[in-house]
Image 1: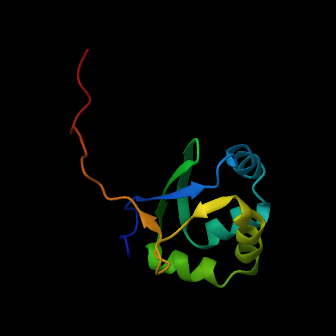
Image 2: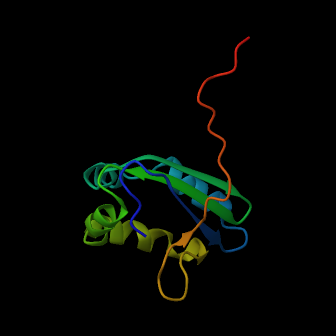
Length: 116
């Protein structure tokens, strides 16, 4: 998927049962090097939600997903971060390695805010 710049990308992960608290702890203390890598890759407005063992993430990119993916895929710090969390994940991609993208099925975008 090569979402256009600024277009939101939404994907999910499945955690191993009972690993939610550990996943949350790691994300309350994201390494500064990871934050710098996200910036270098042009990733912004990155948000993560969790309910039980289901994690949903959304992000936007300045130069598109393909560019961001190329930057992060070659990063040693990304490799270390991923390895440090590998034990918490049940599924992070399809069998072919494709992220578990979520398809937009509805959007309501009013042109103006309703009046008082």
